[in-house]
Length: 181
Ligand code: GRF
Image 1 (cartoon, rainbow, N blue to C red):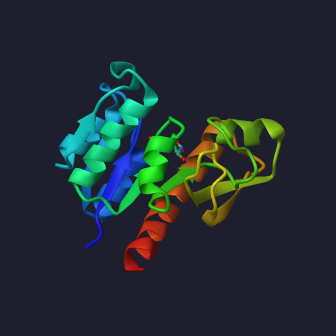
Image 2: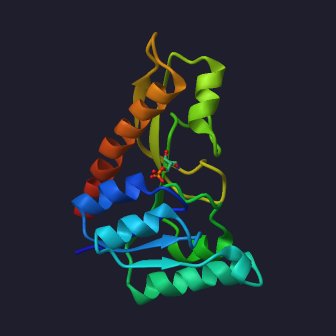
Image 3: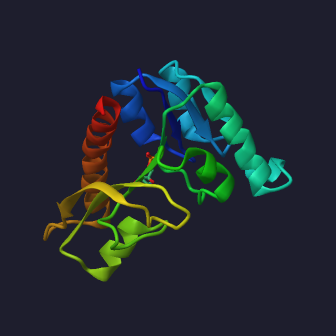
């Protein structure tokens, strides 16, 4: 059985959906007070949290992550609202084994504000993308994506909610496919 770790910085709703469907070996948060850690407790999923500022460098921080991943023999790292760019230390150890979810139809609207940027651009559809992680920001090879329409009577909140619903469907689908292969 392949082992999954999830990295999340904040709310963790995607982590929750994943953990409800698959055994998650552990969740990591780069914020010690992130809500995702409470979700992990409630779901009895092992969690770790430490912060970049507690290390001398990003390389040291990522070396600690690699150590955790190796200790748990993780096969697949699922970034789900992990708000840091993956650096060379983590990537060189786990390239081809890290995926990310992005709340837009890449290469449209990369970056930290994919939903808001699509909304402000006035698009009539956006989407959700799952991709392999490389050193860029949301630039890795696309695994799967779906379109999500913007409806005439949408507010940004209803638009955002529809995108999250699409995420909760797409991420488990892709994880299932990767675990089966
Ligand atoms: C999701 O929209 C994800 O696509 C993006 O950050 C958000 C995280 O939400 N990368 P949550 O923490 O899973 O609730």
